[in-house]
Image: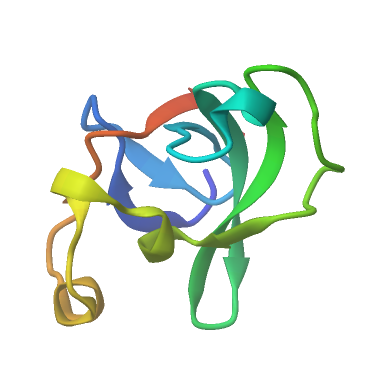
Length: 102
């Protein structure tokens, strides 16, 4: 099993590096649809969600966009960086779903 990120999906399943996550899209829905899928990758300073495809297909090249996992949090899942850095228990994200695991 690959490295644990200390994030949980909305079902409480641990999110690991190389997992594919489906997350709602709040902007550009006319282009992408209502969700996007991202591969979890390890990067300097944390973990990133790297773009794979959207509800309407692969609109951008794979890996073309993405961001650190904590930057993708919004609304009820918003946390401060102190919580992120010093957490001793996994952070559950109510808007993410694991689609596949490696």
